[in-house]
Amino acid sequence: MYIESHFQMMAKYNDRMNNQILSVVESLSPIDLTENKGAYFKSIIGTLNHILVGDIIWLSRFNLHSESYVSLKCVTTLPKPKSLSDVLYPDLKLYKCVRKKVDSALVNWLDKDINVSDFNRNLEYSNTAGIKSSRNFGELVSHLFNHQTHHRGQVSTLLNQMGHDIGATDFLYEIPEMSA
Image (cartoon, rainbow, N blue to C red):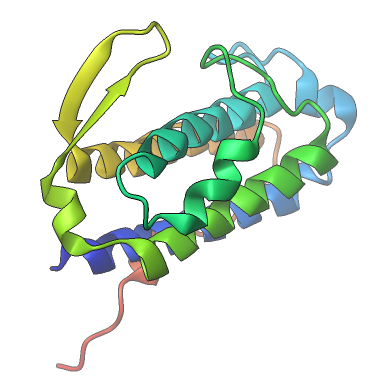
């Protein structure tokens, strides 16, 4: 397994899953979308925004790792979240537009801008509380994808409890079939 191709597949998986979720949530009423369901980020739109806020924060940090990351520049122009619970996009149409923009930037960044040696260097950043940190960049990219998957699972559960199926969620579908 090569880390670069693995992350490229994860970016495509992220895009597919976000599209599958969007196709279901677009059919929800505004009440179903915003109602407090007892989840950590309360509502479906709250949880979706949390995923997007995490992506914006991390991709903005990643943008600082190399001047060659031109695909991430568009993410740095988005409103800056103040906390991980910010609901920056309560309107589903605007959320969808920004979600697609961020997903496209993520796919393009990993397909076009990344150098495999970048994953072995550390990224220095400050968290949302201003605490400085330095961590392995490849592991931080893994964290980005793990965070997305974790919270999409929460959204999937909320939708399932309402009788909605988002379809196949396995990463397996991104892994190429190899001849025996």
